[in-house]
Length: 70
Image 1 (tube, helix red, strand yellow):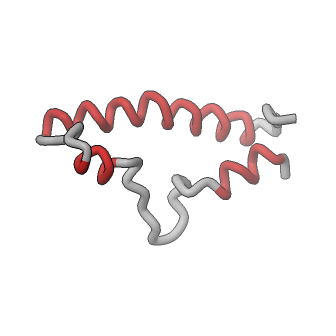
Image 2: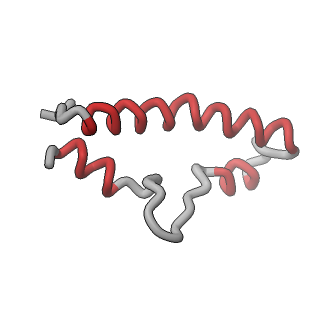
């Protein structure tokens, strides 16, 4: 198994088991960046744009047997 595949599997955002990760929503609420449904939607879109693309790229590379970290 490549290092990239291991990193994807070890990532705390990987949906394995009962653990759920908020992606930083609690701190965003505490800081006042998330105040209502609209700001929560904007926060989630931002998280998907950054974190989602990074995780998807690593997962795709690992699935094809590539190791972008080599």
